[in-house]
Length: 171
Picture 1: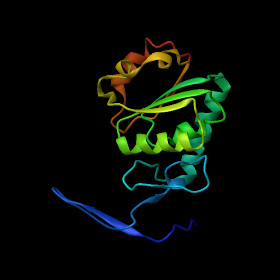
Picture 2 (picture 1 turned 45 degrees about the vertical axis):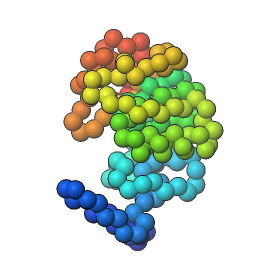
Picture 3 (picture 1 turned 90 degrees about the horizontal axis):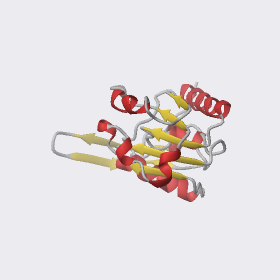
């Protein structure tokens, strides 16, 4: 059995209002399976995998896949707060993560800066029309793409990936 800390707060969201009572933040280990820091709290509402044990297996699998292919410049699409990104911190030199949720990008950027992952950059980007328009400068030379799309899928970016120079796509 897993022990989960008690509820510290609650957030209620209605059509035109929101109430927060207490601290509704979430233990960072529930958001990022392989956090580069011992303790961190994330704002409630960020996407996270529901099952921590399966999430750990997922991050391990992605890391192993990237290691086996030898990629060192990663483009991560739909990166969230960095769950897969930070699992790659000892494996790749550069990572650019695109994510639509501004709070997730802010958390990932702050954490990367705090642990001095100078080659990691996170960008708020709406990928509904693809990812190419968001690439700048050094972003263009990626050899690996990591894709963790929402349930609605990623058909819009997959069409662009067909013409990408990446030798590896981990989906």
